[in-house]
Length: 127
Image (cartoon, rainbow, N blue to C red; front, side, top):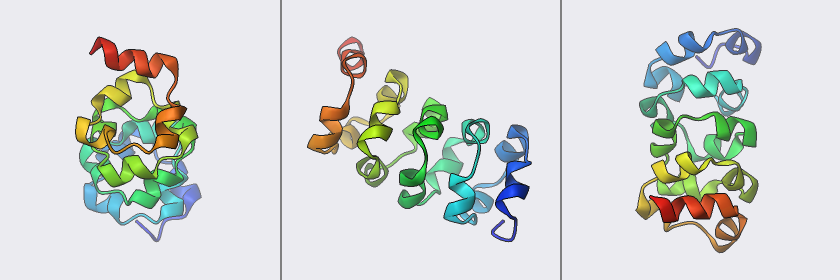
């Protein structure tokens, strides 16, 4: 996969991205991973996301973060969660936040906690 250019990867349809094996996704470079469109990111499954490096997760734009499915966000580990910028944390939907394991949520930094919106916090109270 690392031999493909970002333009070649950008031409893949969401269904093609979804069909990539975890090993193929893991074999992508950081620039390839963070160059995926929001539609391609939305097509990534939890096994594919679990294989991403923490730096890859931290390199996604807020639009890309918001496009992850809840199952994909549930695959984030505690290091991935801690690596999110405050803007990325703010971009998470309430449903995405609720998909993250409690142990991983408890690892949020003070800055990340302060970045949570009122709607995100309210979501914790209703679950």
